Image 1: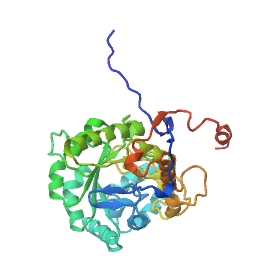
Image 2: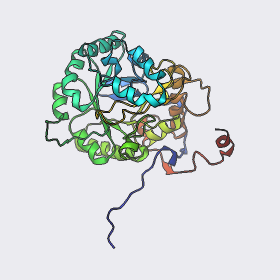
Image 3: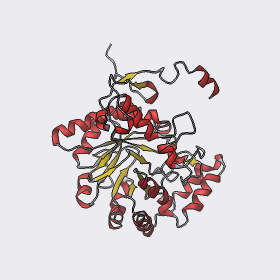
Image 4: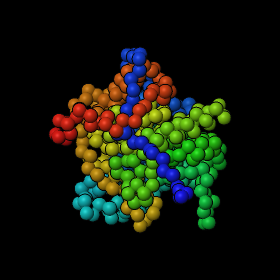
Length: 377
C-alpha cells in the first residue's frame, strides 16, 4: 500500500550533544566575532525584539557589552509615551486577565514620532541600533527608521517567505526593500532549506531561524507549526553554504528562540548558527524592562492570543548573564564563557570552525547519571 506522506525525524536541543575533539585550545584564544555586513560584534548574541527584553536602555547596555539588541518598533515603546507604566501594568495583571490586556495594549496606534525618538536615544548613547518591523508595516515605517539613522532593520514575522500570495495587496518584496533602505536587512523567521535559500537570493544580510520555540511563543500550540531548532538550523546552514557557493556572498544565519542555557547556544552554533537571538534568559536580567515577566511579540491577527506572559523572575545583571561569574548551576549565566569553553574542547578558534564540530543524537545527554539533580529540580 502506498504511503500518503513520509515523516522525517527532527531534533531539538535536548536530543543532541557535541563531541569533543582530539585537540583542545585555551578558551581565551577563541574568536567569537559576529558580522552583519560592515558591522562586527564581539559576541554572537542578539536580544530578541520583545518588549519584556529590549528597550532603549537595554539596547545601549548590550551594545556596550559587545552584542546587539533589537527594538520592536510595533511594541509599547512606540505606542506609548510612558512605556514603563504600561510594562508595569502588564507585569502586575492577574494571569486570568493578561491575554485580554495584551490584546488591548497592542491595539493602540503606533506613534510615528516615537520611532525617531527611540532610535535617536540609542544612537545618541553611541550604541548600535537595530529595529524590528513586521512585513505588513515595513513599507510604512522602515523609511522613518532609516531617516533616524538606525543601523540594522529586522523584518520579522512568525513565518517569513520570499514569496507571499495575497488577493488584496502587493506584498513586501525584499529585493526592492534592499534597494530602497540603506542599511543591512535581517529577515525571519524560517526553518527550511528552500525558504532560507530563496530569502538569501533576495539580497538580505541575515536570516533568523526558528518558528515557535520561544518560551513565550504560542505558535506551536495555536497553529501546530514549527521545526525543532537543531534540525531547522542545520537545514538553513546548508542553504547558507549553498548560497555562498552560488554567489560568493556569505549570509549569516541566527538561531532565534528556545534557549534555556549555555549548552543550547553551543549546540546551535555546532549545528551551523553564526549567532543566536535570546529572549527569556535576557528577560531575567535586572535591567530587562519586563520586570521579571516575559511575553511573546504581538500577533497581527486580533482574534488570536498575542503570545503568553510567563514569569521568569529576575536573577542578576545582564553582564553576569553574559560573562559571569555564575551564581547558578543550570547554565543560564556566563553564556559567553560557555561558548568559548565549548569551542576550546572542540579545538576550534572561530564560530565557522565550530560549525564543523561533530554532533550526535543523544537523548540521554541531559538525564544520564543525573538522578539526584532531577529529583531535586
